[in-house]
Image (cartoon, rainbow, N blue to C red; front, side):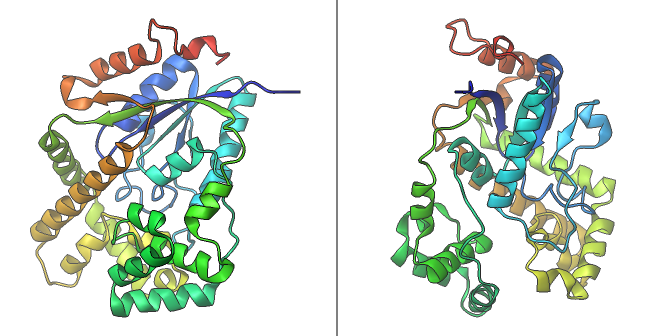
Length: 330
């Protein structure tokens, strides 16, 4: 028996663009639940640095895939895909609507493209050797090597994305199959979702940068420095670094290490954190702007979150009949 696609709302965009607030507002209207698409918010113990929504921000709306993973564990897109699909299926089975919300473009694209990634091709010894090379030669050297065997994957990875560069090289070395080929093979099945994507953007880049600067200041007021010190102490113990945990890459902690070691003042480290976050947001925007079929909302065109929500609701209920989430059994 053929099943109808599961209706799905996706809210994507760069950090500090107001994704969580919009997701919660729409969840109230759609009888919805939020599924996080953020590769760092999965970790417990670092809620400030990863900007995990507090209970007051959730406003009673259930959120999934946030703050459940120990810091010592690594995480992958394949693992997130399986968990996100399970969450969406469960939410749908209870007659509710799923709102996927986050800034990790790879996760969102993999879900929308219905990729079937697995953990095959993993070899800890190969991975450790590649990480050692990255330490000695730099990630750009590994990215250049990847470009020789898998130019498509190399072209979409940033030199700072060490984890995924290593993963792509590891996959090819252990299986003889490139990452781009694996992705192409995995697209055979049609998507089980009737997905509608809202992409938060900015007309003026400075408007987003100002929001990022204010967020960093707020995170420091909340206790980011103490949280960073705790993570740094764990790292010094060797447990996080040795495990290859994804958490050690989180923007918001590593930028404060020079302050912890006495090399910089807290103000200087804070400025570096703001700069790193702005650069990350720029990469996020570059990724999301390649997405097709998304309904773009420019957050600097709306004076309040309420106005943004109204615009998003109108986009999801366009008079041309392209989609009405409330008519899809949600």
